[in-house]
Length: 462
Image (cartoon, rainbow, N blue to C red):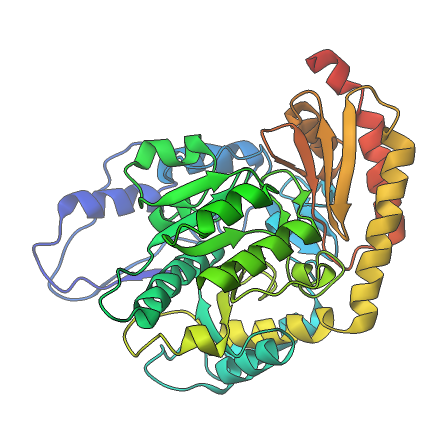
């Protein structure tokens, strides 16, 4: 017998809330007024497993209808209700199987249900889950040590997401400029970002995101950001030299923007100009970092290193985390109380991240990602390259984009109907492929076959 216990502590509880709860207990789909009686003493309200609904599998239409009633409408979701996953496969409530080449938007680097990740999460959840940052915890320190040991950085700061990591990087950059200013000089406070970039949804990170339609509904956002053409080193160097720039934010490989890769010359020009002007260089590797490019860090392929790097998506294997890695020079400008977070760097999430980092940082694992990426790109070129709508297939490792001359959504929808999950990117004309890094060549071959078979939908859409 399932039961819900409702403890009423005050006789003046809002009747509208109890009415709502009564409707929920009676199925939630009928707008019937079934108020609960309010008593001074605790009262037990029970129904047999909520009329069996807890044990029953809800069909797609039911879940979508309830989502439309109870959630704020910020997502244009695909008409699929995913219920479980294993490896590179996910399954919906109707029992259909999908090969997952979206990986929760480049998050599930180890796929779904990795045994070592699960063991780390379960053991830590049973030991210590959350303590806040008022106290020390071993998993947090261990994760910081590991990240420092395998990167350019000297110190780490933890957040809860990529956008939070970029917010911290914005604050750290401005604080650093104030820290180094002497003799009454006005510190630099402005930023450079680039076309097609994406750095997050909060107001600071949003101000650094190039797509106007993301920013317009919330303006005015943080002022002082100049967007330059991605790859235009000359324009960036000239602006840096003017002395007003606190930091330059750049993705070594743009994900949301359409899978565009920087050149070594571009990043090296930014590095040299920033060094000369005392400007910080920030690499956003939230999507392209942590093994996805075939290198642990995407910037390693260029031999150019930042002052600050932001991380998030795959780090904890599906649990929310962000990280900001910084040099000692940057860290020396940050004092107690300058920034903080209640949840960030919890023992639970850091233990999960350690399990992920243990696997993806191994040379053999990274080499396999690189080889699978090369194999898949060649396979896609063979199967798709002759299609008149396919302009280019690009990317590194397992972050790949198929650039089309028409909108990509019809192809993405057709792939989903055929059991393959992929994403869009760019201006909606790029198919973005970011599978779990554990994907096999056989699964990649199956994905390529589905993409090839569904290409004809582009003729109808054009």
